[in-house]
Structure formats: C-alpha cells, structure tokens
Length: 385
Image (tube, rainbow, N blue to C red; front, side, top):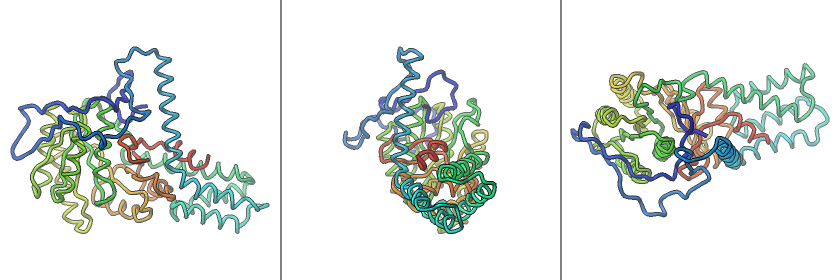
C-alpha cells in the first residue's frame, strides 16, 4: 500500500527500514544566513522506532506478482487491525451504546431515537451531523426501510460514508491531483501549538521518504525556538535535511531559501512548518499569505496542500480551531492526531460535515509509521464491526 505517491511506478516502496542517511546538499543551493541540517549520524538506538510489519520494501526485490500481491494483502490486513484498535474506544462509545439502545426495545419510537441521538453526540459526531443522520433514519423508518438494529446501523454507516466522501470533493483529497512534472510538491502544515504539528511533520517526512521520494523540511516557525529544535531531532532521526535560520527571521525568507534548495536538489516534496499562534490572527494571516505568495512564485500552484493538524482528543474544541484556521489559512485538508487516545473519534465526521474538508491522514499511535492515510471505509467499518 502506498502512503504517498505521485510517481507512476509499477511497484511502491514501503521501505521504512532504509538507511536514514540523507544526500548532501548541493553547493549551488542558496546559502545566505540559512542553515541546512543534513544528518549523517543516527540518534541513540532507543530513540528510533522499532521495525513494524510495514517496514519492508518491494522495490528491487526478485518477487513474483503473486508474492507482491500476498505481501500487499498482508500489509492491508495489518493496517486494518491497527485501525480497528485505534478506534476501539470510539467504537465502544458509539456502537455498544446503539446496541444497548435496541436491547430492550420492541419498536423504533421517539424515545429510542432520543437515546440514539445521545449516543452519536457522545462520540463527538456533533449536533449538525447527528441531526442530519437522524433525519435520514426517520425517513427510512417512515418508509418501512428500517425496522431492526442491523438496518439502522447500515443506514448510519451509509450516511457517515456519504459525508466523508462528500468532503473529498473539496480541498485536496489526493496528492496525485498535482502533475508529477511539478516539483517540488509543497505541503504547508498549520495548527495551534501542542496539537502534534512537529511530530506530524516528522512522521510525514519519514513516510513520504520511505516511498522513494526526496524530501526536504522547512523550519518556518521562527518565533518558537523549541519548534526548530524538535524538527532538528526529527531530521536527525529520519535523515531528512532541514532548512532553518536564526530565531526571529522572516518565515517567508526561510521558505524562499527552502524553495531554492528543494529545486537545486530536485526534491520531490517540501514540507513547511508554520507558526501556531492564533491569538494574533491578523499577523498570522499576513504571514501565511506572504509565504503562499513566495511559494507560488517559485513553483506553479504552490503550496499544493495546506494541512491543518487537529488533536482528536480535543473534540469540539479542535473543530473550533479548524474553523478559525479555515478562515485565515486556506486549509485544504486535515491531519487528525491521537485518534487512538479518545472515545470521541467521531470528530472526523464532524469536521468533514461542518467544514467540508477531507481527512488526509490520522495518527493511530506513537511510532513513526503510526501516521496513516485516512480510509473512510475502514474508519466507518471499524466503528460498527
């Protein structure tokens, strides 16, 4: 299974266990006051994630089509199991409550629908989404299409899937929508401090690199020294070069140097960290707009994605953060972190419904390969299995 791909290759690398040594930065890259961190030494062994069933490569191996297909199926099965574990708390909150609603009920009546409403809201699916789902259920009941718990669950599943797929018609649902002739593919990462933005960037860099892409990270959150320090650790851990400048430098200047370096290296992907300040929205808006102009001048259509990182544990507060960033940052998609740590994983549906944005990636654990592409079918099936 490919994590991230624009290149049209017959087989896709899943080699998370490849060497973490980065290529040296070319001499013709713009230097100015920029620092290019290109790690060549590994961190202590305990800081490197242990190998997982995902850590394999199918490129360059003498395998038959049948063997490759079997390996792909095994990886898919492992992914499905991990995803089910990640949403277990939400499943218990939602599916089991629905079961209990029907346990002693002989018919679907107003009281039962009220209990169903409470179950959906408890999973943080949100009031607007819950009302939309219940309206569909009521129509099904009136038409005699829903008369038992399985039909009810199927109706709810169908509505949740329709919402998630509907959101994919907006924003950016796939990196393959951008021609592979455009390089680098620029991803701007936004979000308030503390939601896991830096960790997400590190995991994205590692996973995209593991698919055979040359990746570069731009440390454009120059107002928070800790952000650059954390990115440097991830750069060291993953072997992905980091472009940084001294604290307080104009973020657009760091991005400009990063764009030049990415083009000089023929990098496939440039991941850009940004400031996470919401308390001064006007300044943040001006800063992000300037960065977008700089990126657009250097590469056609850049930034190609602006991903908002949302902590699933924060629930409806995370949704409100998303609304704020949507106003000022031109967000094209969502990265939902810590999905495995909450019983309110229904926030994914609430975001898709209320913001009309696709969920691009989700965090389902602490390891480097626990950031996965969001699969609506897998998500909904895992909630109701």
